[in-house]
Image (tube, rainbow, N blue to C red; front, side, top):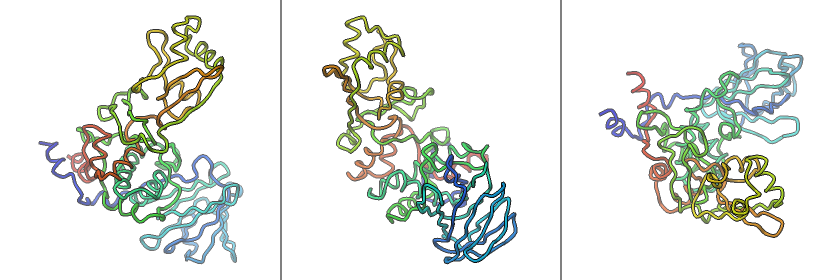
Length: 387
């Protein structure tokens, strides 16, 4: 009965809790600037220092923030505003955005929606974007998927992004925010501006997340290209998850990251197998397997009957694009020919993009890559957790 109710509510309605969600995102994580200049993109802001209003920041206002002696020194082009232990930019109107430019090695202009808290941390500026989740989602979608895909794919990526963010929102709790802006969480470099379909894809799936049969948010893993076969979660990570099952994927074969090649020294390869895995290189039959390996499907080890050589370890050690590859001896070299790009668990982005171009709907695509899952609105999760 419980599951039927969830499915009945599956959903495109906008629950109250879904519209009020915000996230704290640590910007420039692990490479924070010492000095930045900021200026409103859209709208205007109230600038607070230590909780007190200092300035109304309008479109033409430029403010410099710099760490000096453990405090933040503020000034505009015409005035010194003083030093503070904490600085806040509170938006005056919905839709306001702030342009941020660091003054050191990376001078790219970044623009983000909503509000900001800035504190000194180890001689640098810790910048936290307090952002409405749907503004965050559209920014991540543009950073992760680019600006040239069909809207239906942006709906796919929006649902994944939203699910992943909410399921990992305590990852940086000890550092004073929830998620960072790097691949470690999800890439988030700016507000979405380059393609209106990204905004539409976010709005048309507003509040929708992916849950398993127990109404728990799933691990919404994704990667660039699976090479034709996705992976079980336990073949790459430690735990088995029922919705992350391997499957044949015919949709990504002709995509940009479907194939790759790397050549290495034959002797270096042999030494690696022997030293790392105690592979019996003196055995001619075993050596032949290690020098001439061409699987028809995705396997996860070289040959368990000879020695345990996990391909995920090989991928990491040799910095390969995936753990799905063949091995071929060419004179004194080993040519590793691979398929796909990424860990292979969950959704294949290039396969999903191709499915969207072929007319599949976003829910069909998600159901294809994640098995036995349900698409629900955040309000449904809140309803059951409040019981």
